[in-house]
Image 1 (cartoon, rainbow, N blue to C red):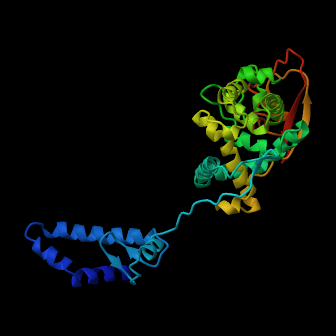
Image 2: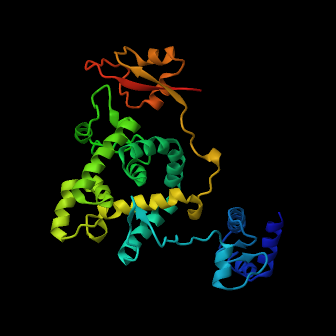
Length: 340
């Protein structure tokens, strides 16, 4: 109410009163009332949606005067945006990133900015990482692949069971043919691209082979985007071995830097404005494992017999793609049963 009185007194004392009287013959009283009312409500809206002690309108300044400097005015209008700070030293898989190269620094800067200020996506990635990284880290370590590759899974899928337009699926985004070639079972009933541990093992087999062919982990990571053959072709064409010294297609040029950006943000989230408590993260699932060797006529009944719902069964075993399992090949599977 105090703001309304203040605004009325301002209009009464200012030249705006004369302007209203001048146009009185042109506009009727209801039109003038509507205009004044609009100004009032717009002023209240601005005041309600700013955290400052001043109320600004495009043509009015109500309340205490501030210094008529650019900085003071900007401070009063809301939160400020600052560029991210780049590290002086960084590695990927134990291999130094040449940050003294200005082009390398600017490519990293771009991806840090994009992922720092893409808050919704990065917040979800941080939350999900608390649930899924322990499983991925265990398989990377068991296969002798650097821990940094867990961030590759983040940039591929943001740790969700997405399917790309090309048909790549799961955390590691395997195409059907590629997944099968690296040992995954993929059919109408089973799709191990959605099994986090087995898909991570398959990704490790690919990455180890790529590293042996291309000479470095950074090159292996880039090949995950453009293929080993494609990367080798560019190595020969450009007479360069290092990913950081090559000019590749726009997506692959950004690919490893996206991984590096997420590594920096995930390792030091508070440095980039992400403030979490332990309760903010998604907790890992608690479960027991059960061996499945035969067929299953109904996974709904299978789940019910184990005291869980079909939804809970699928939540931990999204690689089960049908409501039944014929298992003609007599394979052995490990099913996770949620523990409440």
